Length: 308
Image (tube, rainbow, N blue to C red; front, side):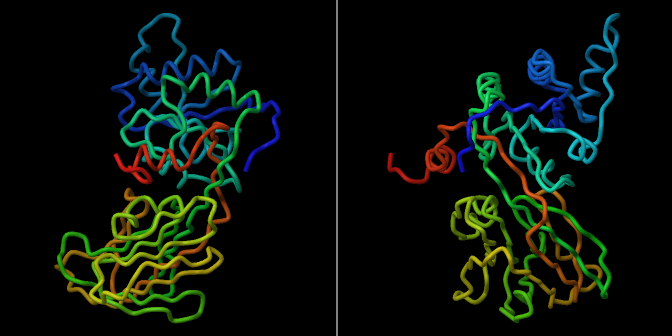
């Protein structure tokens, strides 16, 4: 996992912020000034540019900032700095287009399980990184496709998970699962989670799934409150393709079954839809300090490992 020590020359850096950044624009300003002091060409997302222009646009010497979309930033910069929390990182991951993308994640949110730095220490950590004192933490992503009547109607990436559930309508749904071309299960439950190792500490964990180290190459398939108590979570190799078929029919006036990606994007599902999940060709390289302790993070964030 450790890289040889060498200087990193990332000239073009993109900043992607959480939506509420206009309320905390001074945090964005702190990060921007530091990067520009290092002679980096910085590209801002639209939320960041709008926030700065709104605050400083009336000043005489202010040059209006032009924002770019997340997709454009992900496609054109050498490195991305996310300013927010895990949610901002998840949104960024779904915009990836290049085979690999380097991300330095600064936490200005709450949990920040995936982020590397805070506003208090990001300058120190960024400086060390640019001197080559870092490790890369590669994270796999899901490629999720929704097929309806033999047509693809939706595709997306997901860093954490793809979740099928019945929404607020409290009735079990029936799901059929194939792994590659093999029939694997047909069962009733509140839903199903397919998670990456990164997402194993999210919805899957809440539903009774295991914590999976990020370097393990696998998917976690976790039923949500299954009727069959023997339907336990399973970890499969991530070279497999998982196909989930909706086997429950619902009347139009009833609330539809939903597919949710990373807890953020939701699309409705109907009878006979197929959700196809495989490992995405893209992956995310998270920048880590050389002394980062994965198990210590589990203890700090999830209270795993030690009794108080």
